[in-house]
Amino acid sequence: MARPISSLHRFANPGRFMRLAGRLMPWFAAVTVVLMGAGLYFALFDSPPDYQQGDSVRIMYVHVPSAWMALFVYVSIAAASAAALIWRHPLADLFAKAASPLGAGFTALALLTGILWGKPAWGDWWVWDARLTSVLVLFFLYLGHIGLMYAFDDAARGAKAAAILALVGVINVPIIKFSVDWWNSLHQPASVIRLSGPTIHPTMLLPLLLLAVGFTFYFLTLVLVRMKSEIVAARIRAMRLAQLGA
Amino acid sequence: MIRALRAIAGRDLRLALRLGSETMTVLVFFVLTVILFPFGVGPAPETLAKIAPGILWVTALLASMLSLERLFAGDYEDGSLEWLSLAPVPLELVVLSKALAHWLTTGLPLVVMAPVLGVLLHLDPAGYLTMIAAMALGTPALTLIGAIGAALTLGARRGGVLLSLLVLPLYIPVLIFGVSAVDAAIFGLGAGPRLLILAGLALFALALAPFAAAAALRQAIE
Image (cartoon, rainbow over all chains, first blue to last red; front, side, top):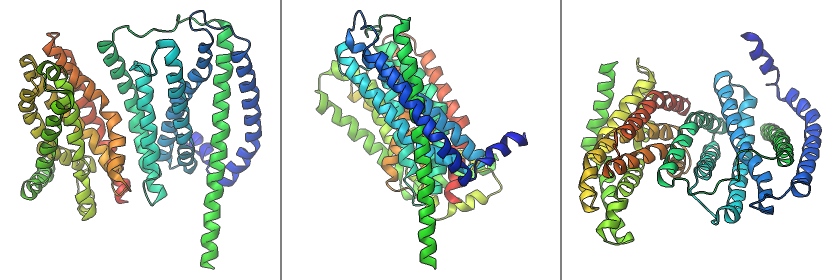
C-alpha cells in the first residue's frame, strides 16, 4: 500500500516534475505532429467519401476524437481530483486546473463540428439527439468546474471545491446520460437519421484512430505546458512577495 | 443522532417561520412564472394542457434553485456553521437536517402549489395524483443535489450564477423523469416505473449528497 503512494509523491516535487515534463514535452509534441499530420492526410485525401454523406463525412475525423477527448479529459480530471482530495497531491490539483479548459475546448469542438455535420447529415443544425444533448450537458459541467475553480480569492479553496464538484459530476454523468437517452427515445422515436452502419471501413478507421491518439498526445503536450507555466507563475509570485518583504 | 437532527431542523424551521423567509419567495416566484406562460404561448387550453407538466416542473425547479443560496449562507456568515461543525455529531447529519428543514419550507410548498397551478394550465385530470407524487419524490432530490452546490459556492464571487451553473445540469434527470411520469399518467401508460426511478434518484441523492456537501462545507470553514 505504501509503495504506490510514495512513488506518486516522488513527483510531487515541482522541480522534479519540471525536469521530467521538460524532457517529455518535445517527444509528446513530435508524436502529436506526426500522428495528426498522418491522420489528417488520410482523413482528407486518402479515405473514401461516404456513399450517402459524400465528403461531409470527413467532419467525423475531427468530431469523434474531440468527443472522445471530452469524456476522457473529464474522467482524468475526476481521477486527479480524487488523488488531490485523498493524498493531497499538489500536482493533481494543478493537473485538474490545467486540463479543465482544454476539456471544455474539446467539448466545444465536438459540439461545433456536430452542428456543422448535423446540417448535411440530418438536414438541421441542431437536433435534440441524445448524444448531442449529453455532450451539451458535459460542456456545462466543464463550465461549472472552471467557474468554481476561479470563484474564490483563495486559489486552494477553489481547487478543493472544484475537485469535489468533479467527483460529484463524474458520478452523475452516467445518470444524466442514461436519462437523456431515455428521454430522447420517448419523445423522438427513431426519427434521427443514423450513420450508415455500425461497422466502419478500415480506410476510415485508420485515420480515425491516428487522429484519436494524436488528439490525446496534443492534450498531454498542452497539459504539460499549462502545468509548467502554472508552476513558473507560482514561483514568480513567490519571488515578488520575497522582494516586497526584503 | 435523531435528537440532533430534530434540534437542528427545528432551529432552522423556527428561523424560517419567524423571519418569514424563503417560503414566500419560492411560492411567489413559482406562481408568477407559471402565470407568465399563458401570455407567452397563448391561452388555448389544448396548448397549455400539452405543455403543463413541463411548465410546472421547469418553474418548480427554478423556484427551488432560487432559495438554495441561503441554505448555508446565513450560518456561514454569522459563524454558526463553525459551531455546528464542532458539535459532537457528524457534519453529514447537520447537512441532512438543514436539507430537511429547507425541503419542508421550500419543497413542500411547491408540492402543494403545483396542483393548484395545474388547474390554471388545464392539466389533464388524469395527471394530478402523479404530479403530486412525482413532485413529492423529486423535490427532495432537488434540495439534496442543491445542497452540494450551495455548500460548494459558499463565499464564492458571483455565487448565485455559479450555483445555477453547477446545479442545473445535475437536475436534468429529475426533470426528465418528473415530466415523463406525469405525461405517462395522462396518456395512460402507467407512471409507476417512472415514479420508481424518481424515488431511486431521490434515494441516490440522499446517500450521496450529505457526504459531498459536508466535504464542501469542511473546506469552506477551514
